[in-house]
Length: 273
View 1 (cartoon, rainbow, N blue to C red):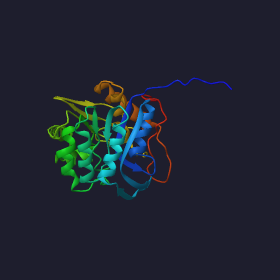
View 2 (view 1 turned 45 degrees about the vertical axis):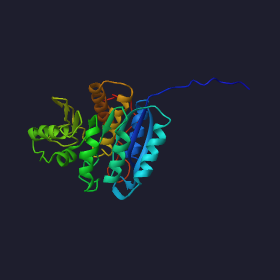
View 3 (view 1 turned 30 degrees about the horizontal axis):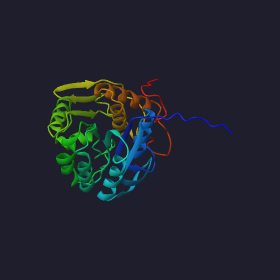
View 4 (view 1 turned 90 degrees about the vertical axis):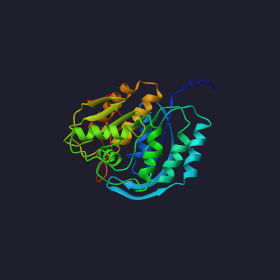
């Protein structure tokens, strides 16, 4: 019997703190698939468990703040996490627990403030918005709201480009150096996103992909940026590559179930054909 020597690998490690999507299209599941696509080892801390499919969310059960912190501490005590993202946190107690475990962790932190889905479904309890603004945004390096979330965070009616730019500045004033507002599938923005990096405001062009199957888009973009930052890719390049990955994921999205299908993750990062 012969022995084969193992070729041990030492990939960068990223951690996602988010909710579980039983349909596999968003949340923890989308994050881990995205990390894998970028050859980053993904760890996770589950904040809540959803019962959902392509037609919508039927139930959400939150874990305790103690359970969330225990998951994070278990990972941190053993694995050299190089970047972190947070997603759906549901309530003020879970937001406070997340802020507590992240505040003294000197790695890049990408906060996806999952409050409202692209379709307008509310995913955050009403009393949690204040906790998100006062505790989590001040320790964020990058925050990635969609249009609904940017409107809620800033108090702006995003009726035109000027209002969107004002919203980005208001969100930045809460703490994060970088704000990326996702234009999503709205025809008005034609696939554009708005990036505010320090005092540099820039519209990022991009085509609007015509597909009804876009579940998990926001999670996937923030996870892609996190994975690339874990690989020490400069932020501007991480955002550009992450957006290209999402474009390809939308172009090859999965028409599964009888509702809105998810984006596809088994593509090469940057593939846009």
